[in-house]
Image (cartoon, rainbow, N blue to C red; front, side):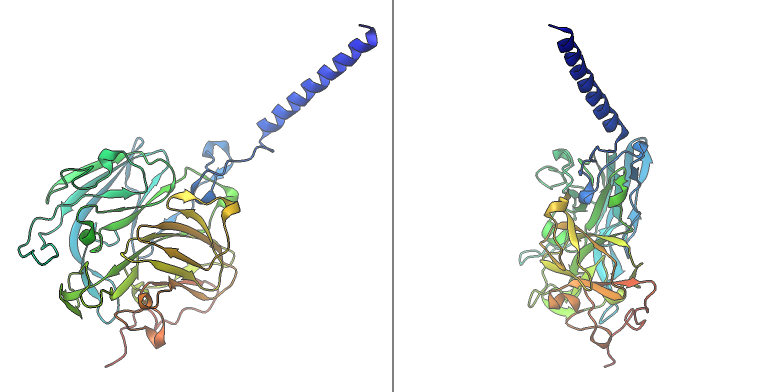
Length: 395
């Protein structure tokens, strides 16, 4: 080998080494490293200590409390009490209904934890004796219950299915603790899984949100709203379809089988207390859970939205499309996002016509009520105050 050949080999080696060093330096700097798209709703779960993520936006549940429990070490503890109580569900033609729920609310409080934490849910059964539906039932019997965590993939002994994964349900006056580590961030739910055809439809439902530890800045939203869809039949009795103020809700509506009241977070639109306020330019996320017995087609006026997560799993950005309506079956949960780029007072509602009426009646000047909420831009004219608290036309 002559001198010129030796020099050529050295030059090639130097060039290869330089390329390797440059590549390593570029990766270490992070400038060309693609952040994995593995978080909730397409968000990237980037560690806060890495400097590339931000804390998730604070979650709100209009008309319902959001609870983050008690965190001791890496265990976050929630306490739920299942009970019967009266709750305002509408402003007309009745206001009150006797329901079942958790911690004095149906839906129950939205539970909020962070990915990686152990969650412990202590459930106390304070439900009254009840007469099971059916022609053979006559005497009240003790009401047992359990709680199932819908979509969270907990271990079998924490699945809460009475008579199967939980052979002995929670008896009246007893407390049972479920403990597990959720697999990943996302929007999920919890509900009774004992005599579900009765207990869920009387109100034993709620949302369970697992937040990522942080999100990529470009995936951050400005408004994060949780909504549970429910339907109620507060009627005079199992065989009497007369809507009655304060009546116990029936899981099997008599007559046509139509539920007279459809709600978001336990209230019809006019009883919700006010609109959801947003600013122009906001990126808005709506987390939806269908806890009812029927399908709903949720429609947003004035904007397109994208489904970013379905049943607890992110939809990849390349698979998303612009929509205005999303159909949801019972037990479904979706996350949808839209950009507030069209100032006004815009309704978000179920497009099944009966579901935007209260016992077949419309609201102020014919406005939709029932399963309806309003997004109102802060700098736009306010929603007519007559809409909220409308109590029906004079007889």
